[in-house]
Figure 1 (cartoon, rainbow, N blue to C red):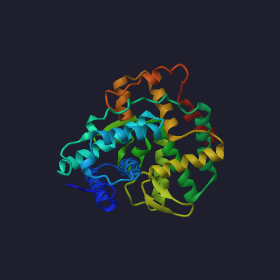
Figure 2 (spheres, rainbow, N blue to C red; figure 1 turned 45 degrees about the vertical axis):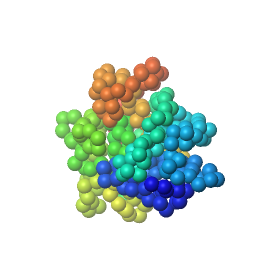
Figure 3 (tube, rainbow, N blue to C red; figure 1 turned 90 degrees about the vertical axis):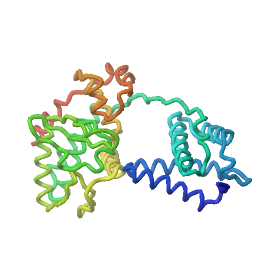
Figure 4 (cartoon, rainbow, N blue to C red; figure 1 turned 135 degrees about the vertical axis):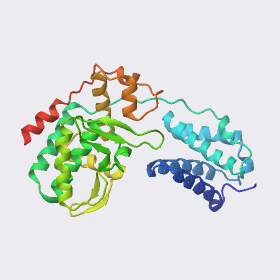
Length: 317
């Protein structure tokens, strides 16, 4: 099938079909957005050619040239590796549809995958944010107070439970189990549900949050919500919305804390508590093959206790 790769409507229709297939498989909005970005990178590579390029030219030399293009464009091996992986999946889709006779990208060796050195949030930044959330809760009323209580829940789910922003996006109230030991149930799209323990202080904060939430006539099953200063806009909160919560805190408190650095602090806390590697990996939501060496190598530099959560809470009460 001779299709000009520069014929935007035709080629993009194949890409849209690929992305729609991912949506049907239950991939998250954020995941599909990343795949779309990766494909746009390949589109820009194709557009750099002067002559017409068809799917008949989609061969090993072409994908090797794309590899060189990525090498010049990105310094991060993981960025290059991800874009090659996305193109490989797209070509698998084209092969399954009979549009390509084989997948030439499978002949292209991807860049090695490296784990970044953990850069957890400093303990002083974590305490500063926690105190700020408690003070704002106490000093505010109505919707503003509810928003600060919501942000306390977000803080505890990340620092106490190691959740990623993608875990928080569509979390339901029913995912929170309040019994002798509070925990949160994570429904992962690729594996069975699993539970992660939460700090004991979560019980008090959660009950207060739920009481305030119900006073607003909240009739949805989402745990979190998106709001402006005047009203609740929707149930659930997007990864961008969560990032904005921390962005506002950073600007106001002059700290460098992010959801990722807060989560990494939680992982160090688990290690120091003596939990097994297998249990920590399960709570992180990663594969058993995932290595914790990069964390263990820095354990003596990053030590966290969560006793301050209760101490500071009591001081502000």
